[in-house]
Image 1 (spheres, rainbow, N blue to C red):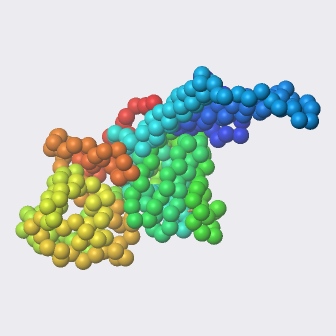
Image 2: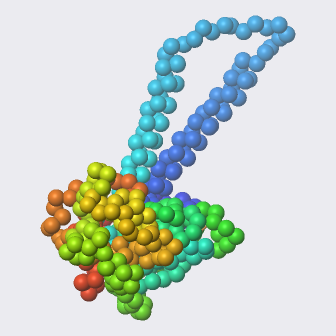
Image 3: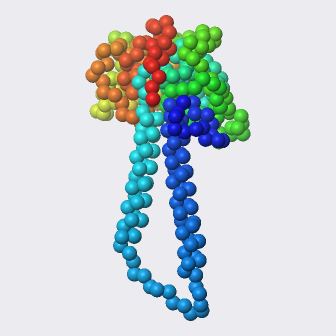
Length: 358
Ligand code: CUA
């Protein structure tokens, strides 16, 4: 798969687009550290012997400093450490910039299991099926404490934090079954919070999806919650209700009562469901009750998917600027430029149609 580096013994397989370069980076750091350890160790022993005290009362030659030497040992480490910084920052930027056109899977951590839901509604526990060569983006949150979603073969590890969304992405590059670990101590069964990541060809992935009893898609389930929780009583489509209309909202900027402007993304919607008073829309009052404790994180995600599905269609979003790369969930371009899951027979296909990258 990579022509330069043989699989390092004792290392997990390299099964994602990031794996090779991260291993190369690691190997570079290891070699660099090894080189200087040996260099300094050998020099220390050599000088220890060469300049040992040969007689009682011996006074060594006094040295007053050496400008060239001092410049050398300042500049060389500076250049090396800046190189490490630049390479590491580049990798970090790649890993934490949301990819375009990724297959989006929603992951929830919970003491002590991993749940995943695919765009069409298929669920799985402690397993994650992903197609070979397609970008996969995980949007993750926790029902209780901090967990960490760790797939060693992909070289990806991302904290899964209650109260917010974190994301992680990768392109699987090798068919196989790989370990999934929780990498954050989360209670007595932490070590049992493990699972499998199953990478198959795209056709096998689709066959697997068909084989899983299809539940409602997240957007459909969200629509049902929207009605059963009576959200629709106030959030009328016309905007004449007690709450603002949610039609064509996702990805847009809205004016708040306090004069500020906020972009409607997943994090903002989530906050508005659980803490409605935090950012009240201009022209409305803080009437909405909190749904904290009434809905699970998965249900919040479903409602958000529903609101995304009634968001602007492709083309209408041209004016929205992409969100900056950050830990915040999906940039607006992802949510807006996508056909609504509820109205598409199989959203997985168009999302996954991208050829392999990296
Ligand atoms: Cu979950 Cu450790």
